[in-house]
Length: 464
Image 1 (tube, one colour):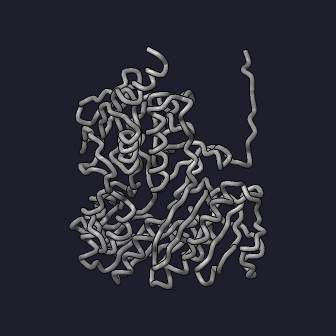
Image 2: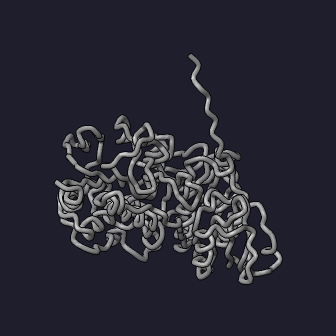
Image 3: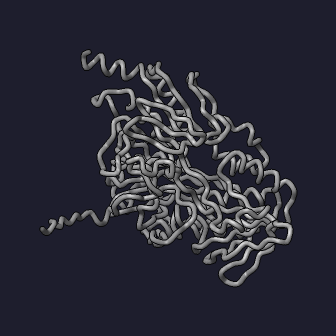
């Protein structure tokens, strides 16, 4: 068989298994079929549902504007797949090319795509987490349960964590005129994702919408009554908040435990892969039959000094899945890198928030359009003399411009005629991100590689 014939057979035949019936998994399956793959395709998912859209769960669903049962992702084409739903992947045998399922069955593959995503981090005290009225929000079932409880008009909702999801939940509660308290370890909401300058604006926004925002505190305990229902939350400053609904919004955990012992480079920060989405093994050697996409992937990004990034972004899941699927069935010369510029959006308290790039890499921010006081602005982030990210509050029309600056490594501070020369925009100021070694709630981009300010390698020879 010729080389051309081998790759044509690779493109059209064989067995591809996708673990993760998610946005990334469905996008990859549709791309495979669109690019000519005609072989066997198996979709494995731990939930009993076909792929659905998650962003509406903390937005339109909690606002009562959409049903959680009507969030199925639209189908661009028929994928002709064998669906294995309601059963989780429990292990991976790289040598035998088999995925082991929780029900004891095994599925063989020629090429594998890992798209298992993330899950909500639960309340760490298991007994308290089991109290009636304690929720997390990640899945459709989570949204159904929380929506039903909010509809029963609780006396107060207590949200632990003021990241994007926690803030959106608080916004939905206020929209329904429910009393809500938010407790945040940091000094303001959203600081883990956008820094303290923008976080201060988010704090004002919450308080002006009658959110009881408690910052600089942690929750030390959740208290239940004799019937097993949550009744109060205890804070590190001695405060006690009486509540009958608690929503734990402490970020996400990547679903990699099933890969323990597999030999892949997988851990709490995700599954490491190259820019073409090929997974690394634990020795740092790239595989050629295992690929990764979506929230669970940890990959180097050419635009950001090849730092390894873990991105919890809707758009990233789509783009990375398309690249992974294309590369799975293409010869090396036809493969392409995943270089999507991170972008994220949120809607809370009537304000649209959107970012591009990687704000968490920025050490300075410059308000280049609008005004913080008016809560209608664009802020550009700088790192080592270049534009690294931008965030907008109700001013998204400028973000395409800033994306181009990021892609071309434009110098920072900015000196453009389009920059608004109001007093607060004349000079950069510290972005005020928290110490990265301390836990914060809600970052949507995780820097999981080296720091761009420390690129030195030290070689120490072995002594014999």
